[in-house]
Length: 347
Ligand SMILES: Cc1ncc(COP(=O)(O)O)c(C=O)c1O
Image (tube, rainbow, N blue to C red):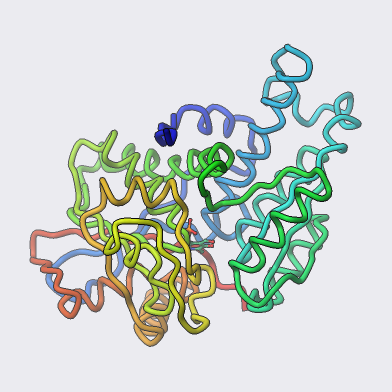
């Protein structure tokens, strides 16, 4: 039996109390491209690391260490003691290994650095150089592995087995669910921040457009919105036409690997979805759409005109809003759409 995704947003929120870099990210309103309104959850500066992924990787590193401590010592290690000098010898014996399109690696590397553990990140050829520099400055070892994200994931898996390290992937598959679920539990904080704000100002969106790579962010937010939001929006999952792995999996009714060219939306260029994400989204999302490379470029420019600097991956949700008619989505004057600018620009 596959375990159900059942996150508790209070766990990452409790841990974030000890994080001086944590604050709620803003929700902005930008100029509309129609009669409806457009709200943007701005993740471009999240915790000084430039993307929402900071909420997942750091939290999962911390939770892993706390759980390992408990298993080994049968005593509780509270989050404020994770950075104690006295446990440094113990944490520094742990190495986290992951593959990344960029941001997940940065989150894991930051977590490892904060808690004096080690980190090795596998990057495929397509990952921009800027990520390499950031990873090195966070003390991570980087390995160039394969030409695609999927190849780097396979190499990271083998590395973790051979080196007895901890594989901390943001995707999941049969038999590998616990750590990716923790990462996604970290992302649910975004939905809670938005719930708190909408509960105060009454600005509940009618439609939420969520971009997907392996589907972790889309599934975590959708789960939390369905569970806790007083007013329910339609959820539209957005993928590059070059990597429509969730779209194809939903159509086939099972996890499906797609083929396609390399996408300009580098962080969404995943050809196989996360099992947890697929299971959540097939139940809770309303629609799955794909956008072109040009659509994403136009959305990035649209954001720039509104003084919001992001990338094509960060603008993919907005791209689907701008193309809503072609995608057979009706938006009217009473509608408020919400998109997430998932990362800042780095060039
Ligand atoms: C900026 C950005 N947006 C969106 C995504 C997609 O997230 P997921 O792979 O959880 O679907 C990623 C993933 O790395 C990302 O870095």
